[in-house]
Length: 188
Image (cartoon, rainbow, N blue to C red; front, side):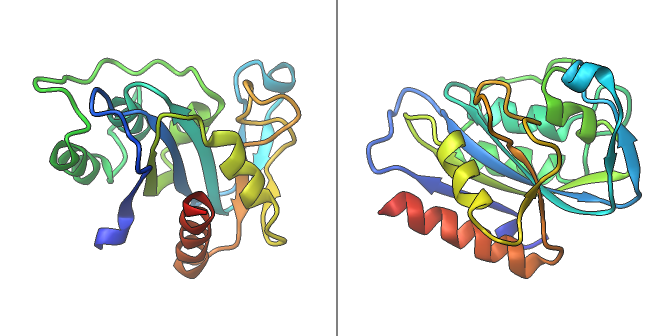
């Protein structure tokens, strides 16, 4: 795994007291799936075709633990990225000394997808910030002609009318391009 697997962008005025911000997760779905995303659409299963996806989320406190939570599974082995992500978050100082993971409970829409063993969390872009960037980043991604919502409203319970679980073109070139666009837009 290269150093681009877990990337960090930091706002210039970041509080030294904590690690908060937003994030973009790149997911690879290896097998066509049908997934119920909790109560979304009354629990009706949604088709999730093979391909690449991103999820945009935020944790204005506890960004490091939130990212590790996404890399864990409640019923099976964690995502392969978990040890690398854990080490990198420690290097960045994004985990409190003595931090220990808790048993994961399925809570957010993306959790239902990440529970699937046919889904890999492959890349993480951490956006350290004192302000929520989730909605801004999701809208920026949706402006790209090649990106489509998996299902309208999915993954964005706290951003009515929006979608934060998105299908992206396959290939790492797309991930690198999107990461660069996000960072460039945030620096403006």
